Length: 249
Image 1: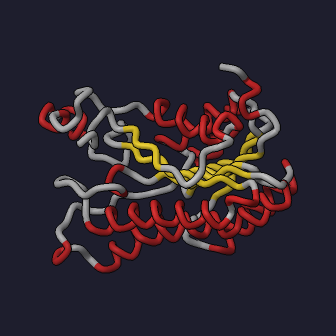
Image 2: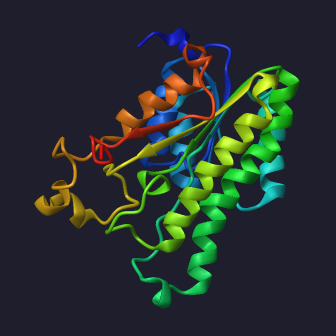
């Protein structure tokens, strides 16, 4: 790993206490970024920040709360300077249910975390990026944010991930002349706690994946690292599938 890939970058990663967010944080730290990781899981988040060292801070953070977003940006600027990278990673799947059976409060919760959280992150971080004169935003969507397939958890999850895809494209166009890039990443099956553990032991679950395996969080993190770095300086408003070939057709 070339430690200088993110040297000079100031990054915020949400939902970073475990899973894909933790993998992003570890890789960003190794690449030299100054890093604020956020999550509602305070114990796990603090432990990870301590492990990653002095250039990493943890802030307990509900991504659906705009006041807490403002606090995160304020803390980041105070300790590390203007934000130049945002990874909107926090998300939930929700309960498996058809539309008629999906509880409305559950629907609102999934939409609030996945879609509203992404919007609020961009809304509050972009002014900091404008001060820095540059920025890269990476929004974690899903293959379910590009096409609908049987087996998706519910309509709220699919709708929220489609919303992330649209928010990404619109924001990218709005700030394309301001040196702020916005892209989305669309993982397929990845070994994280968001999916039922039994799924990973089910051979039938691998049948739709040409590579016949689930992705590892670090594999997603390498793509996110690329999009956060200056190596992707001419890339914006783009969708990156990382799914073992699942959506080839």
